[in-house]
Length: 101
Image 1 (tube, rainbow, N blue to C red):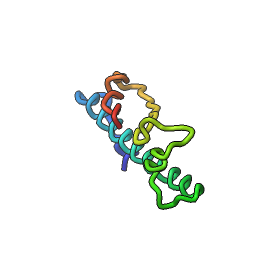
Image 2 (image 1 turned 120 degrees about the vertical axis):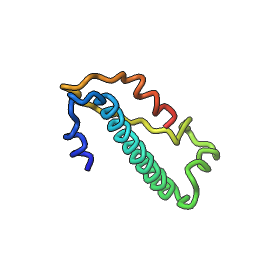
Image 3 (image 1 turned 30 degrees about the horizontal axis):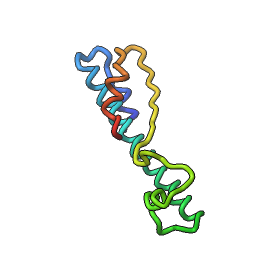
Image 4 (image 1 turned 45 degrees about the vertical axis):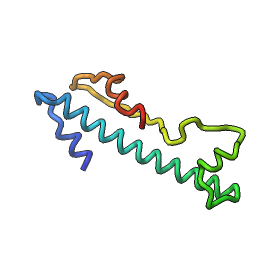
């Protein structure tokens, strides 16, 4: 259970930075998967509404539309972290591992 995992973090653990970073990385990965699934659902709904339920989103983009998404496979996620009692991690370094996701 992820909530228990958070509760079990010990600020006095000599490896706490690694444990926190690993936990946050797992959370971000979960959020990326959820965002991609939601995007797929929304795109399929849009295709059905346009009358092309069997068409793929990428095929629709290739046909030319008014607006285009440059990287439709990329998602944006934000994770708010309360870090009272723990060391602060480097946001840029942490976030850089997910740039292509």
